[in-house]
Amino acid sequence: QVQLVESGGGLVQAGGSLRLSCEASGGTFSSGAMGWFRQAPGKEREFVAAINWSNGVTDYTHSVKGRFTISRDNTKNTVYLQMNSLKPEDTAVYYCAAAARLHWPRRLIVGAYDYWGQGTQVTVSS
Image (cartoon, rainbow, N blue to C red; front, side, top):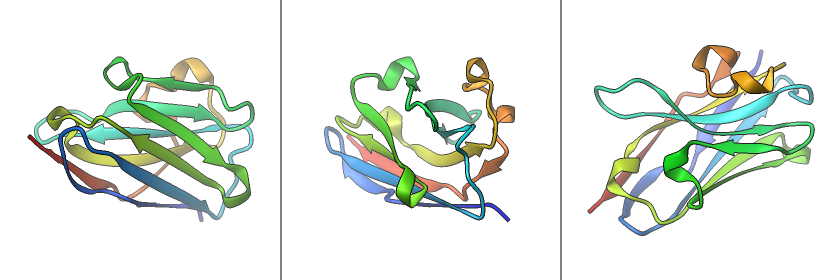
């Protein structure tokens, strides 16, 4: 049974940084990808970033490019999201997601991922 466990959320002032971690257990994603999504109150879950597990190719939503960095540690089956220069509009519950096999053009789609973490709250104060 695959489990994704997130950590690293919290409260930070605008301009600050946080690093989210997501450890996967019970499965491997060497042919797939892992991603981060977020959901603010009253809004739909949206794509933030993804990383192709085999070749390390990454992608980001426009609003976080240059501020967020997604990375992976194959030995620990863990993906990270380093978030710098945080803004109040980054406030949301952040979810880790994993796909055993992912057709890369579908990386932005919630339904393309097989497994989800429980979510971690990120709050950025102004």
